[in-house]
Length: 177
Image (cartoon, rainbow, N blue to C red):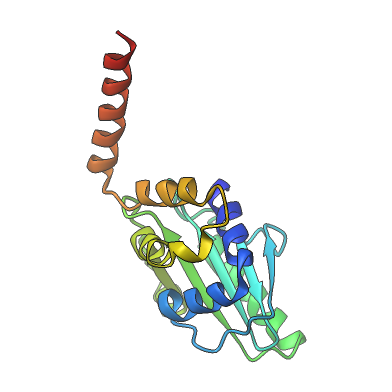
């Protein structure tokens, strides 16, 4: 939830940079600089980004898996896909793109072949590389360095992350003496 809020903030910080992010990281080459971002209100979708031609559906999975399996075997991704398809038809929107943002330590298996076909997994390494590459564009934001540091923590494998936490706790104890 926190990172979804942060991503929403930085996607809206500079719309031209989000267009660049959409092209370089998401593979969406025709995103407009005029778009709206909705957090957690379109059927509980983490990030809903809409311009006049398309919708981007982003599910952010930090330390969690796919939720909401129904008796019919449908997941939250199925629910989001069905809702979005209905929405774009009703609003004459050309297309929708579906993404799952995952930390490098969180493996999300897309068992359903339809979901594999519709959703693209984007790792936090890819997100981090983008923001690090264009850090100068965010220099006026006093919290950007913290955001970048937080992103970097999600680029580690689980063992690297655990080692990093252990090392920082150890150094904290050493410095207390």
